[in-house]
Length: 265
Length: 221
Image (cartoon, rainbow over all chains, first blue to last red; front, side):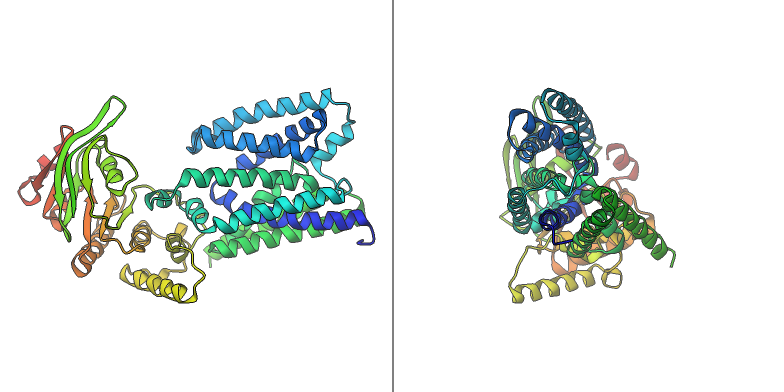
């Protein structure tokens, strides 16, 4: 399968996507932001169609929209109850805009399908390079802020009490989340990128009990998911996203069963 | 020593308290009592530097203060073990010697708080009393000279309350830790503390706990 250039590109891109999503996912789950990551994916769709409409790349459009909206959400409120409402309001607006932009642009509907559902053939060598640079940037941010971000994500109240700058950490996190959504959507599609941003980390939460171990398990499950998905998509010609989401969902339920089994033994 | 002089706090037009004057000496074990909404937590936030006072001064002589907040978001799915939860408050270091010191510190604190045997259990699955001990242990990590407990005993049953307070008393007596205990619990106040600061009519007054009747305490606190 690596005889084809597009498969090599897709493999490299997916590897970086899986590492970023698996890492960021641990913090998405611990900060209870699964809903936001889902919404950012939808906003990413609007951004990509905006990019097509005005003639910049879909990735640049996605980054623009997800960054603006994640910072807007972060500034509107850090209170979770109000945040949910803010997210709904912002996402409604952006999805509407996405549909408008797409209908105004001259691109065919298959292009929209690619943005929404992902594709392994759609990615060029240049896009892979952009994606790698963004992924490395996200990973670096996490290495630099690892300790305070862990404290704030796993014990927000304790971090506040210890005098950490939690608001700054929250904005930093939202920026990296926006970038991760934009990166991930290139292969998995904007509609299902949140699968990689939530399920592997949620599974990890059920089987290990420290932050570093959660990151290892989460990144591992993401990697297995995308590699297996690429391989199966290649031999069956079925959509890659189907295999990735099926694998991650099965892993999630196995993790949940393992936790329940441990509780009873 | 913590000393407040003419300390006042307003949120906009809303006066929380005014002209607080009090002193808490090193090694004191005092309670801070008063009705809900009287400004206890606001005062604590000013003491630890999370809020600014509107006027007046508070001096803490630059000491480290450990604060155990009233509420935590720990549900039964919370993934971290007790030890990993406590470790969240550690500073990051790549120096092997510092890492060794950190490990020793964690072990000492686990021992002092009686958590060594259950350190690997997920925090989400342990009892309310054990959770409170873990919160306490996390706050002890920075080697504070003063410890502020915000209603830490509120949701515990009597036996567990006593266990936790015995532990706090031991820390106070053995390690000369100053303790500020925010509470509504008359029995615990009377048993463990000599002095209390009572929030009343937007200001604070020192009371002798032993001389205050339970009725009066409950009416006012």
